[in-house]
Length: 272
Image (cartoon, one colour):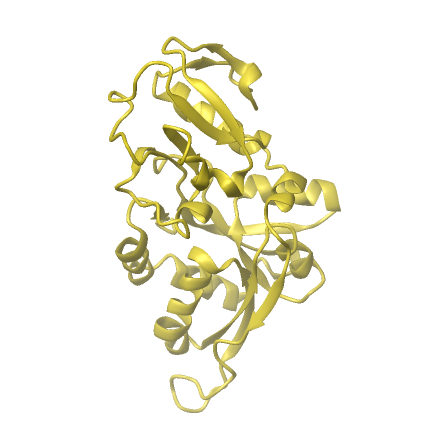
């Protein structure tokens, strides 16, 4: 399973964080018990929206209040969790988490998968790779994690051949249709569609750019290894409140919310 490169991802996004209190402690569902507040770090879309939905619609009945701690980069949520500024976060897959633990000496653990921010090849002109002419230009990320992710999708679709452990174009062993690859910084890939025929864009950048399932011509499927998980520290792994939060995040109500807002781009996990 491919390890995410924390440093390269961090340079693609400006680091900043702001705490948004969604709900203060108040009377519980039975009118007497105080709600248990959980501080959860996340990026605004889609995880921040998901946390707001759960807080406003499901949490109080379960005895919880969610304090959403907003981050705008991938480099600061884990240190905030490690130093106790939050009790959990929702933005990363387990490969990313494992890499952080190895590099920073962390003890973060996954409570479980919540959603897949499906990556896709998008085009404003073509509706499938069958329509794409030979020699077409395909923009891919220039970081090893996501470039390898993109090339593996093309290989799985039979469009190229590549080594099993590829991380960049050096791993491509056959390109029968003569595609030209343009390596682009992850955050600017939506803009690459102005020049490229197709661009590989992850959901975190596709959604703000207005790219949808309708512009996607090849999309990551449910069997992907890149589901984002609810993550906490080893000391809190069995905390009942966090277990309840995980159940709410993987409930049918939350799945319906995800599908209504981002069908095809964000895929809910089953919670099993």
